Length: 347
Image 1: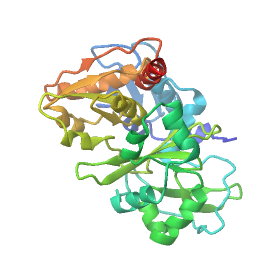
Image 2: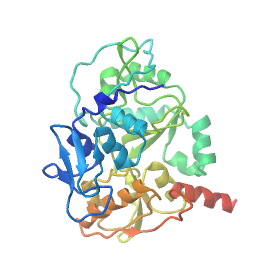
Image 3: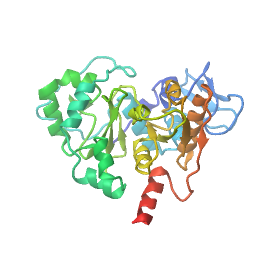
């Protein structure tokens, strides 16, 4: 069982946490993400490291900020903070026998690592989609095998074995710089290196305009893992399925989805689609990509889905684009669930 120390997580600079959540702050003030308002009423107190909305009276610590923003439980908020800031919990990590046990004393900042398309391609080319990974995507999620193979989706069954092969072929330093490995600590206080992904993890490669893999996201299938999606460590995220823009014509419709699996479900239904990582993951620089097309959003039926829609709508409005919003039937959580049930009905 993972055991976090809340007092450590609550000492993280609250403005930095807000920034990583995608909250735009101006002079320690922003519009509240909990309720609708015209004038910003949410304020951050950096000396005491807390936040408070003077419109709805919501507020609290760093953990409370994450929990309220994503509508998560206390433990889920702690997991996100620990993963985002590289804070190792008191847990049952065991050092890899052949991995170097070296303490890395360098100070980490945000997005300090570099994309490494050559290394990412090696990982994808040396793995297959087998067993539980294929069953999850093709049987449970009903995705066509042809689509799954076209997107070169892979599966990690043995992370330790993969890590050793990577160390032998590329060296630890390059693995760290590319964000596929990081530093851990075991019960004895010993530091060691290991993959960011664990056993039973699906890997989704992200292809850019030049058809290079410039990002990889993991999706854990482990029933004991509370973190489902595992991003590259300290590497800027990208849009999933960016290469589709090479096929679009002026005025074509393109669905902007929250996440990779919703994007894949949309593609399986015959739509043009791209995936954005996280409810607040749509960046301003993405907006220009949609200027010649008709952007559509079918947001998840939850608070995160509403947040995602607002984020995309605001950013595209800055470049003069209006977003078409299509509501998903309330009995379905998201696009993927809608697609799965349609697939069932067509069988």
